Image 1 (cartoon, one colour):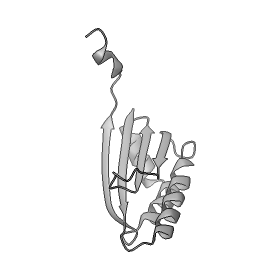
Image 2 (cartoon, helix red, strand yellow):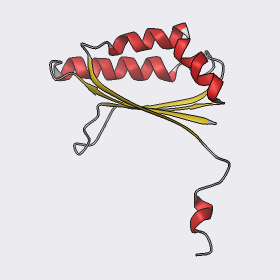
Image 3 (cartoon, one colour):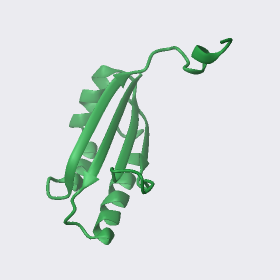
Length: 112
């Protein structure tokens, strides 16, 4: 499995109302993609960061394997959502993709 994690900061030029509209559109658009895009297993989007945060939108997607990332990134339905976060709307995008191993993190601390 592959995790695809992105944080976006929205433009300071947007009003709070416009930011909220962008957040909701991105959440709705991304969360409808599992089942439409082959290899995309799950999508979670958070748009209610605590005041201690410096990001406006968080994406946590799970894909079946590395080849699924390419399919996802080029898929027309994904590209439609990506258009919402144009350069005049999103000032920062940070992405990390990583492979999830078979081990369970809870097992590290067991019996210690």
